[in-house]
Amino acid sequence: MYAIIQTIKDQKILPLFYNESFEVSKNLTKALYDAGIRAIEYTNRGAKALENFTKLKEISASEFPGLLLGIGTIKNKEELQNYIDAKADFVITPIMNEDLVKESAAKNILMIPGCFSPSEVNIAYQNGLRMVKIFPADALGKNYIKSIQPVFSGMNFMPTGGVDADLKDIKEWLAGGAVAVGLGSSLMKSDLSTEQLTEKVKKLLQQLNQN
Image 1 (cartoon, helix red, strand yellow):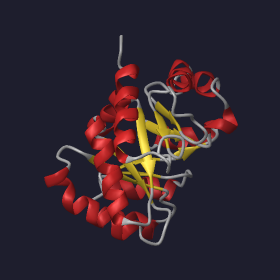
Image 2: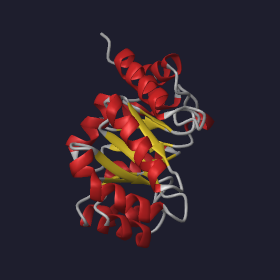
Image 3: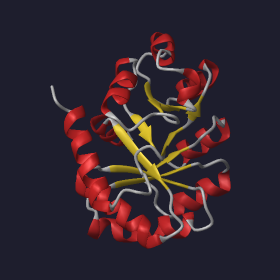
Image 4: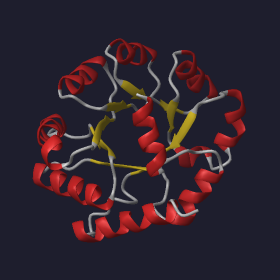
C-alpha cells in the first residue's frame, strides 16, 4: 500500500477520468502511460464504468506493465466489492465513510478517502490511513492543508477538485503542503488529441520533477 502512495507522490499528479467508450478509455490510458504516468484513477461515474474498468485491468499487465489502475467515486460497499473483484489497485472515495474504510482494510486494499473537515481527516488517521483526498479542494483554498498538517503527522494530502493542470497552480498546492494533486477535467480536455495529451503530461512531469 505504501508503494502505491509513493508512486502517486513521485508523480505529483494523479490523472482521473471516465469515458463511456472503452476504446476512448483505453486510448486515454495509453496516452497517459506513454507520458510516464504509472498511477491513474478511473472514475465510477457512468453506466459503463465497471465494464470498462474490468477490460482495462484485463489488458493492463500486457499493454501497460507496471501501471497502477485505481477506481474513484466509490460510495458504498457494493461498488467497493465490485471493483475489488475487478482487481482495482486502489480505491478513492469522494466522501468519508468509516464503514468503507474498515471494509477496504479488511479486504487489504488501499483506500484514499475524500475528506473536507479535520474531523474526517482524523477518522482516516485513527484508522491507520496515511493518504487522504482533500475534496473539493477549491472550496477550501491553498492554505488549508498547511493549517491542518501539523495535527496529523505522517498524513499525505492530495487536493482534488478545482485544481488547474498548469505548472504554477500545481506548484502552489504543493507549496501549501500537498504531496500530489488530482487532475480531472482541467487535464483531460476533450479537445486534446491523445498525442497532445501525452506531450502535455510528459512536459508537466518533467517540470514538476526538476530540482
